[in-house]
Length: 237
Ligand code: TMP
Image (cartoon, rainbow, N blue to C red; front, side, top):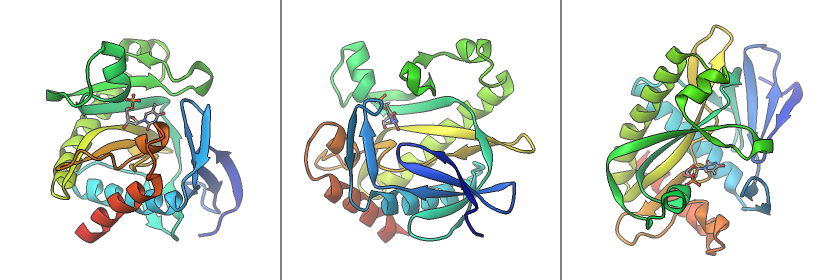
């Protein structure tokens, strides 16, 4: 399958149409942003890590009953996916306090929750992805009640599968962000990516951060962190 025309460029990926109206090609860049694009940089090799890691996670999740947009990995940075319209909700699941949760509620990072939490943001860069609840999402007609229920159940299923998977690699899955899409025939599928850009990974022994927080917080060792988490994932494969 060949790229026909660029139809979208995001902060970390480009999307191309193909000859098949139901399929797209996603191409992962090394560009990194944080704080809604305010901080910009590049992370050498990130596109390769995020593409290949996302595809491994999507295949694992498919096996475990979560439908995804994944079709076929085409190259180091490019993947064939089902064409979807993205549901404009960022779905965030947390197992441990960190990031905006710790800040918003004035608690330290690293508190382990008895139960995972879920929250939604309205995917809208101009508004800075404001937090919303499911009533707000319904009022804004971002999705139907049934779709939101399905998205919630898929998100918790993703958490169960990935939490266990990463623990076996000596990694704590602290939190992550998912996006879902709707195919031409109305099916809700997991889309976007599952990578160190969109998850927090802490080494289970040392607590070392193996994700994009190294870039967001200027901790150094950004490329090494991406390489390390990728190494663990590929060795497990
Ligand atoms: P937060 O603590 O900043 O809300 O982030 C929660 C999780 O979501 C974290 O794993 C990073 C991920 N995330 C994204 O993938 N995109 C974003 O724009 C933001 C803010 C967070």
